[in-house]
Length: 392
Image (cartoon, rainbow, N blue to C red; front, side, top):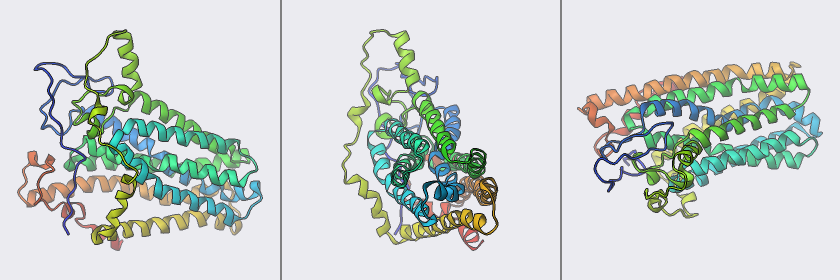
């Protein structure tokens, strides 16, 4: 079977009057109407900002997991439950982490990235505050961790969607590499910070409170600076965003400059695709394709091994080596540092492998941004030299 990497929608044409300036809901940036064949009219400065901002936003998924591991022994003592009971909260978190993206990513594809991200960050912040206030209830810990996972776990998949919205295929590695490295780099020091805070305060309250603060900062940044990028809503960025799809900054700015002035700008809601609950299950159909199932199995295997080690390390080093929370956090650091370095290398290799494959198949530089070539071996470009990494 041959699979093709598709973009959500081809850029739509517009019926604006010649010479009319259109406003792109980006960071302090107005972009004139572009050729509809241009993949994205969002400026390079915005792409650079989103690369690192999305890396920061994704830590609501990854940091929430890594910062929790050094807390396992102290939570067991504080709530007077077994280590196995605390490990169950890790399992519940992982299960919610598996299911949440299927629902919210499909919703974001339909109604837009901004509204869904705002809801997810809010959903993450509330249980984070609840965890900080919870002192004795194990059922509350279990429930709030599940809600925390539901809120944070879909953010990476939506971030990948934003990258696909604004970066052509040949250039996505240059965004994904730094984005993943930013996320993994911050998450790598999470166990050290979490362990240090828990050790210094003799509890977990300030660890969860710090996650709430991170969520609050992320909510403000999403609200004020993240433009709507979904191609089902704004096309290639040339369709103006209105209503809930606009940044808070642009809303405040327009209220100051156009008090009471109505606008005939097109409503992106009219161009949206209808979302159905069945869309949630559509993504799972990929398991039915043998090549995709093999890739998923490979990723899932390494991920399960990673989780097994991360959960076991705090218990082993606490009970056998008598390490405190800070020292346990330091023990977790090397593996996470390796993930950060790997993200940097992977991003560079993605674009390099794509360029080499394109050259070998006589694809000129301007054609690398096109996604309509069915004969281009995308799988070869993405998995070039992957066997070396599998063997390592």
